[in-house]
Amino acid sequence: MRRAELTAEGPAFFSEVARDCAVGYLTLVTADGQPRSVALNFAELDGDIVFHGALGGEKFTLMQAGPRAGFTMVKEYSFIPSTWSAPDHACPATHFFKSVEIRGRAVVVDDPADKARALQALMQKMQPEGGYVPLDHTLPMYRGALQKVGVFRVVNEAWTGKAKFGQNEPARIRRIFVEKLRERGAPIDLLTAAEIERTLDG
Image (tube, rainbow, N blue to C red):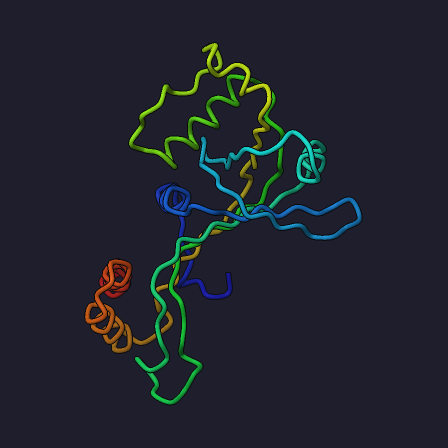
């Protein structure tokens, strides 16, 4: 990464972004060499990315070959208007975020037990309050569904994390951001202010 001060590492960071990011972006290359980016819901499972889809179509056909794949997830924070640091000048406007970029390979999950684990991970992320019978490949109520649904995995071979909260700005400017964010006062602004303060403490 060009700006080393924005680098974020460690399993806790990875899991946080995976947990809090509802939509991620799968990148594959089609048979004719064209890039294909697909937005989808996903979950983390054992450090990899899992998701479901149809047992047919271009994505399924591509993934049957076990191709190289990329996956990007972004946890968004606040937009910072240019006026907070440079009145009349547009360039300082920015948006803060945490992101993870994964490099690996894509596989189709065939084993019913593994399919159930992946789908259960998705349910735990999307519906943490429960209210359903946990997915288990041995339960008759789920056997038919598990046969009909496609489950896919991006095997995580390497990843890069980024946390952008103005670390390249002087501390004086970051303190102004914290003040302005607390004045604006939206829930995401308060979370962003706390993240900036961590960069100041660091």
